[in-house]
Amino acid sequence: MTAERAALRCGATVLTDAQLRERIVAAGPAGVDVPGRVVPILDDDRVAALTTALAVRAAGGVPLIGDDRWNGDYWAGLRATVAAADPAPGMAWATFSSGSTGTPRVIVRTDESWSASYPGVERLLDLTADDVVYLPSPLVSSVTMFSVVHARTVGASFLLPRTHTVSDGDLEHATVLHGTPYALRSVLERIEAGTAHRLRVALVGGARLDAGLRSRSEAAGIRLIAYYGAAELSFVAVDPDGRGLRPFDGVETRVDDGLLWVRSPYFAAGYLGTASGPFRRDPEGWGTVGDLVSGDPGDPLRFRGRRDGAILTAAATVIPEDVEAALQRLDGIEDVVVFGLPNPRAGALVAAVIETGPGGRPPSARELRRRAGALLSGTHLPRRWFWTERLPRTATGKPARDRIRHDAIEGTVSRVV
Image 1 (cartoon, one colour):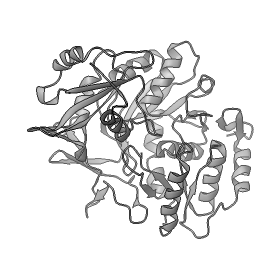
Image 2 (image 1 turned 90 degrees about the horizontal axis):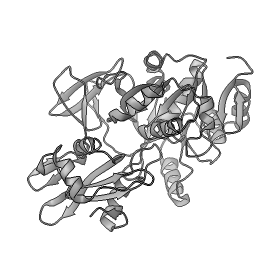
Image 3 (image 1 turned 180 degrees about the horizontal axis):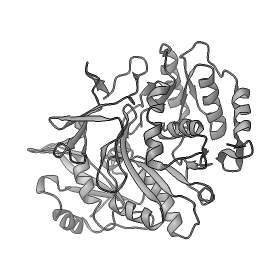
């Protein structure tokens, strides 16, 4: 990288590598009193938050960036929890779990747990120092921090959105995108509306990917590489060509009674302090976060959600992701979240909140049942339907499942009749 070339772009802020290093040095040790100390960072200025994080890492601390949209009292509680935890010797990075359910946990990891996967990612993306990596997810996301650190290692530039939305101006510079299906959809909407772009490849996380998104990407000249991972496991499986998710380089998988176990050098060390979560390991080095998969050995992995997310309705066990995958095939449904609606007789009713997109309106409940009935068995067919133009989402772009379920139960989201 030459001294004049931009290393970081964020809105009107453009920094060369030398200028970025100067800012990191100016940020100083930033609260690191002992090596391995986890340092919470919150700043609505993304460049300031990032330079502080990199300064913490340079001083031997473990940076932990929060979401500037969080409530102040909520953030204060998280800071107190982090402050009460012992230092994490040997750790380099800390990230919050996605926060789609409950209070996010703090996940800590070594630098090697990320850097070991760099060669595999570079091969998938053909990533070089000439690329500009667009990171539309916020800094609280492990996806973004991973790619920031990776880009700096390769010598590539990285591009952060100035706000919490994708902008047309960003697409003038970006050549590579790493983010969620939701972020890619937002990018494609702009491109399809006539915005010029330089994107050549998109690395998109998620256990499920709408087939239409791949065809739209290809029509825009963007090669789409889908992958599945978890904050605790990092990369697990990749689909570079639409033929299904298969183990990422260096990853071994096995399935026991439908439960996916993974072994790789990319695991996080675990959770900070006394927090517990879905991540568990056995003495042979296999780990799981409770993912359920189906299919024969050697076939692409077909994810069916988390074991603890099943809906028990009457005599059936329904995996929400199974129903969601079917409903996403219906015209007029941009995205959907399926959950169990409490019911005194059945235990729970299968319910769905559909996203129609701006200005969209759903078909009638009768029509939805008719269409869905061609794809789902009776036990899996939603009995209650709700709709919204846009589903609420977490900082990483995932549907905020707890909030969506709560809104439906409380009647604050529209019922489809």
